[in-house]
Image (cartoon, rainbow, N blue to C red; front, side):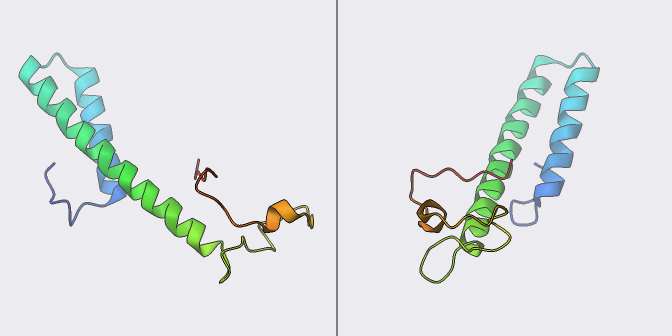
Length: 98
């Protein structure tokens, strides 16, 4: 990775990953170059995964009230008033941005 991990952004990492994939798909590269590019890509992929996981955790915190229950309102499009929608999330609950 050309940039230090402190200055690397999610968007820069995605752009660099796209460059690596394009370069690896478009030319016959020496094996050593392919391996080093693959290694860089895997590091970038891990970095992006960490950033997405942090964003998911932050979004989860923002959607809870002070008691730990999910906030009502826009999150409950149907307006249902069931106990399940008011229950706090547990570690087994999966939250995903995509």
